[in-house]
Length: 437
Image 1 (tube, rainbow, N blue to C red):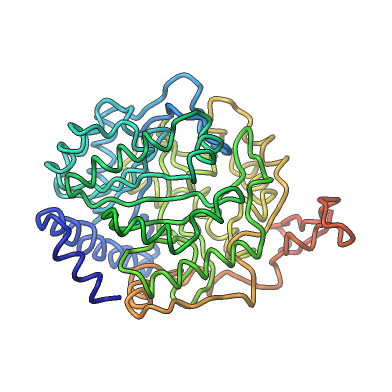
Image 2 (image 1 turned 60 degrees about the vertical axis):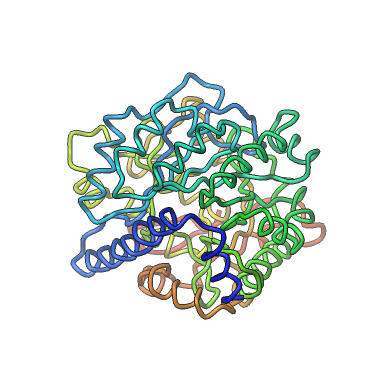
């Protein structure tokens, strides 16, 4: 597999673009994580990787989307984008994730990317606006990798994305990137309607044949105003996806990204470990894209370094979550987020102003943390990379107590596994004890 991957890198890539990836995202990204570790030892904090949702608008209406795509357009202006990235670069950051909505609807996106040739950007996109001209511009810039989402077959894609003809437009944008030798990825939000089509070796083989450089299988999270929880994966399906990712990494000449496990297969959340936080289209600084709560903003009249280092809301989010689960707190313990928001006066950062009601209505379910089912990485290269740059940075060893974990499946009625009365512990910070409601 490693020889086949090396051959792909030598034969299929544009060497200038490959060098920029290796230097900007690889070497400088590695250094940013080492700087993060040094800060932690000194009791300081600044995440080495930032997600920026630069606009809320989108041309699609995906199932389970938490972004206000139909609301009045909100975007981060160019000056604020540049200031934010410049302050992050001053902290050693070099790799940024760009989200929406649909990022290519931000008319200044390409100008923004061009302003920062010393940084690398991963743009999460449906690909519909990557025309041949846009693809040529991306190649010229060289510091960007499009991550194009594919949600299934033509029929499933139309269902998942809320419009007809979605897959053909997406594949057209993907083709335009690959025609220009841009280092391109394909991601999938794996749910019940696409797992049998896309979590398959034949799909990965097709991506390799097309020239796709990497892929990302992240799992569907039922969030937002129309969460559609019936699409969420079962515990068995979550384990199936994890095993698939581990096996593909060890056997296929393609890079497979995941953000849920360390080298030993232990579950983690990159927002809880401090690896990343998120900035929304209104400039609000949130724990992650699906937690639309904040007490700070990039528009505050303070340096970003001081905002991150001094945020009591973000600090307690990391510590409180780590005390109770190694998984996704939104899926497992939405009650903790409600308590945390109430304690710190966190605001709902959406235009719909329904996040608190949505959290109250969320039915807890298992996420990536299921004790005793860990699947370690098979690839020595992935094991090494994760031990160096993607682990818990001591968060769970410091805070996590397994006895505090509440198995969401245990809150279902055992006779039929239909959601019933849920018994979740209420955190009592003053006494450090748990009560049951």
